Image (cartoon, rainbow, N blue to C red):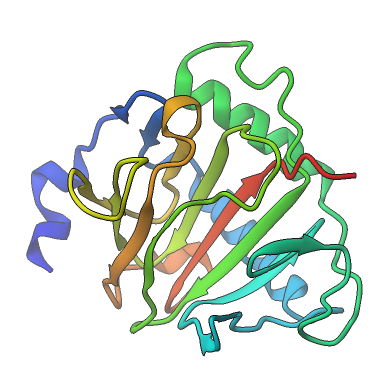
Length: 222
């Protein structure tokens, strides 16, 4: 735990882990984080509630609410046919704008977001014991970048290669407000969450425990 508050952690530069994979620490302001937490509390009220998806018959420890399209292993649908049959909430316009700005911030290219129009977001909630195994985000037709935002408790994020779940991979800590983008040659890299550090969320974030992770994607569907 002490490493979370070391000089190295507090003074984290933006960097490219592998070609196409960019980390921008502290990108969201604390006010933006708190506002998004308020939105999250509305999203989980339905019409499709927060739920743990089942993968090969086993419930994930992470719970998810979706926007735009409903993700269920291993497909997207407009209606949550694996939950209650309701249509998911529309993808918000402000999130499209945020995704475009995120690509510019991550890459340094002022035109990186010009053609980026995400149409779905998986909003995951991690409690103290939640984990996510190494996987690829490959249920989308489009290979446009994935934009990931973290709010709440810090987690250990493992980002790997595109071939398998094994090494080479790198473990990094994602803290509240951090932006992570992966696209291009890193779009299909395996990645996962190996641990959550309880009690590390900033009080002003509006989340007193746990971690919210928003991943915006372009499904390529209509």
